[in-house]
Length: 424
Image 1 (cartoon, one colour):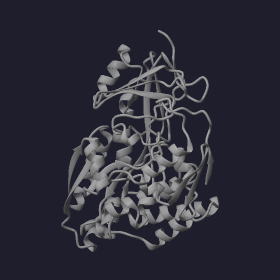
Image 2: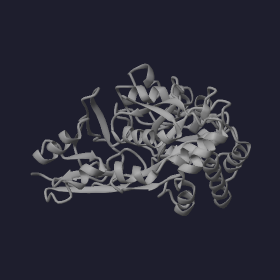
Image 3: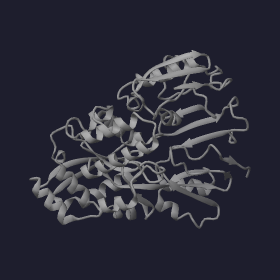
Image 4: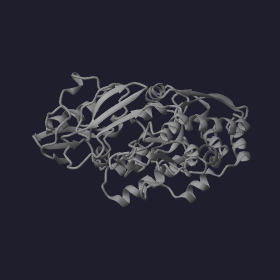
């Protein structure tokens, strides 16, 4: 791949972005601090060459059509000034080329940005200063919206619905490309290494209860690639057929597997937002007829993320998503990839899936890739590798000062790219 850089793009520190910065950024991403999760999405990069100040060539070690999609989502490929990691703490400071510059970061309190006056795109951004307040209590967010203390907030479906008749607020919603899933860890010799146990778990869970009780009916069934992601996901009919609850069959499978007496398991869950813990609690109750004793352990997201990266969990209630290429939703099922080793070890692998995954990476033919990813998703369903639950809608509310907001399908960004604030 050869990329021509836009000339005159300035970093927030006043330095012009050049090919040397791009080379440095990719090489840093390829050798990150542990757990280095992003390496899984960049693993096929063989070398990065700065041809001249405004030309970069990335040579892949093997054919790989996914790179443009990965680059399109900056989470895994932020472009930063050469040598910046030696100058600042990248966990709390940042220098990029985006429309906003980081002014202040105070953990668990706020993040403050100001508009980048040297942003390359004329006329943007519209909003001069932005403060993200960390308000873990949802009712505090609602109170702040109504008082005018804050201009917008992300909310759960239940709370958002209570605001729909409030003429001073606008409630926005849209699908979010992060399917909710109970991730199984099979590194150790655990009962759910057994296919019949995993199938029993999937048959015992009524996903409609999660849709109704956690999301107020505003969610969809999902496989590995979520609904809304173009033509790549499995059809809803396929998901309904796979997910129709059948407790009697689930109990029979547990008996056939030799685990009719059940077992104990700890299910870690992201504590906030609460939806992940709510899903875990519903799963806990629905697995009781299988004599599976689930202990739900809510964790602060930083601790949870560390455990996920390290493989330090038995089950985990999490979200998988926001990928620039469909391969990103299934890469972790490919034997030998970074998180595959941390999550599955030698407890689960599938040669057909590995072959299909490699073939899909070796061609740019969309039809061939589509067929491969369809079959990969079918294998994941048949093998019950994880417990995929639902794909939620995301809700945001803004007051009358905010115009042009949208709910982003592909990332955490709350639609501020197009937003403006009027006076008053």
